[in-house]
Image (cartoon, rainbow, N blue to C red; front, side, top):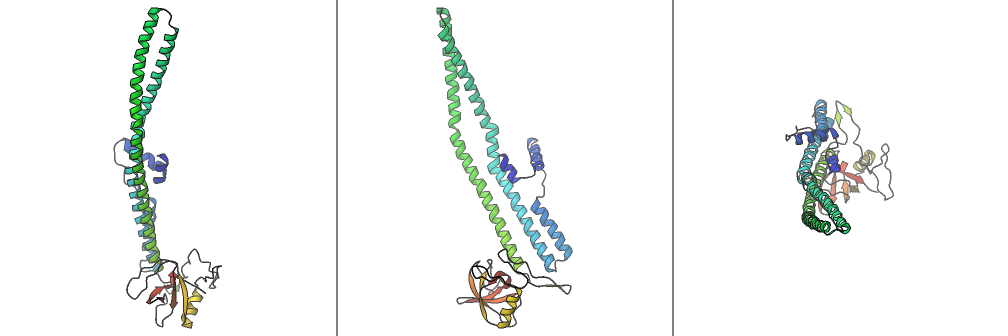
Length: 305
């Protein structure tokens, strides 16, 4: 339970504050989380750079995505606290304490019963023996009654386990929803950033091309051939392709959903044929897959030998 709290709320001071408010039966004040804070700073910085600039616009888009992740994080914490932590805490602080108390009481009754049996064995006089037998009957009765109470409580543990299992399923489902949301948010953001020009002018100053993907190892404008025969796309490769007017095979780096009928939707890792068309935007190539043809963004491609 404690480690789940640490996972959901790593800040110990925040956990203490929430604990105090919970004990006081008061609602804890709303607190901005780290992704939301980062998102706000990105949006502020992007606004200062200027939404009309590529970098400023990209910062704003990243900031908006971070804030959406922050909202999803908040929903995960709320759902997990309600459906998983609260039932577990209620059991530990309620039923479990009752069971532990009754078990302890049963142990004491067992000690009393053993002591009564010992006294009966040692009793020699008839009067003492009768008194000891009477005491044994009483302690035996009390022990039996306490044993039955404890047994019933312990038998209830099986239904408690079934309830906790459902709560655990709810916790896992909340995590699945959270990570699926985060993945979709970042996928959408990646597509948005991928649609930005590979080279853009800002106040007559040309910026560098975007950073290649993690699988790419580009040195200057040259291309390195991997063991699988892939050639990483670099500016010189694309210029050569546009100038020669021929076609090349290209591997798709990321999924891409066509914005309109003139574009071609792409699936990551598929191989398509690409070629340049006169007058086409420098950030796009014409892609072909079987009978399907349409524009595809250069930043989503990796040219092959």
